[in-house]
Image 1 (tube, rainbow, N blue to C red):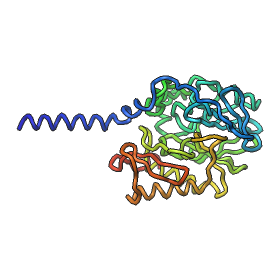
Image 2 (image 1 turned 90 degrees about the vertical axis):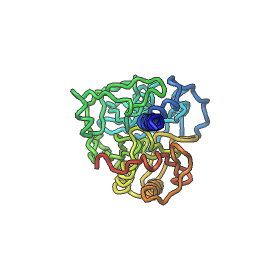
Image 3 (image 1 turned 120 degrees about the horizontal axis):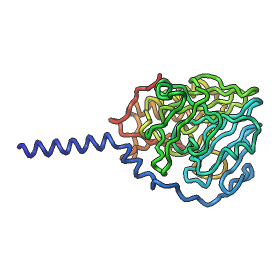
Image 4 (image 1 turned 90 degrees about the horizontal axis):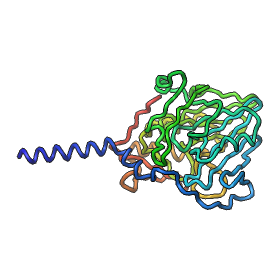
Length: 317
């Protein structure tokens, strides 16, 4: 009997360790720990120009540019929004190539870098900027001694591709719901967590364009990572629906297929909100083991943890 009890205790300890370390175990399978090989260049259509053999540029409207990295396997998109006094670069890719030089070729205004969240494929890493603005959350403020913020492994996940987490020198804190003035343009900061605890989106109030980062884009949305939360995702969807007009164009940070930048609309946000609400009530069927996959619509899938691991309490209401 003692041997059986000991065996059960060992097995329970192993299971508990796997559950506790599940994110590290999962992340270790998602990359080689080295920068990935480049994809072949693709036909990006008449709206897109190649800046060089890596970056593309697409003008979305007056003084608004999508800067694409279609040869990077994650198909990242960052956005340059130019005002009369300054410009904002929303996201900066993984930093294997210098996106700052691309942005500076499009404007002579001083550029403020704003990461939609802190994952390695958005922070630019070795690419640095003169001014950085990040979301103003209490736990980040507490950590940022002298406005220097050292990112944690769970926030950055750079081990996937051998990228060291940067220290962000913060020149501006962005309160959720606040307005960033670019002179003759204004950007509303929307706190849209879910993919990560620190995720934000930017709403261009004049043009009716919403830049959503990894909160929503065509393809699989990740809600199973160390910094993800289902209650956060539902909160972010509610904020977006309450703030952005129905005719808003949404540009996300990744795409699945060419050509051009990934674009969605508010119907897609409604579909996401409906899916999240149904999952919470146990009214949707998922496929897969880990992560579990729910179909949002014909363009979007939501990848989540099993129900017993899901957290439906928003961390920052």
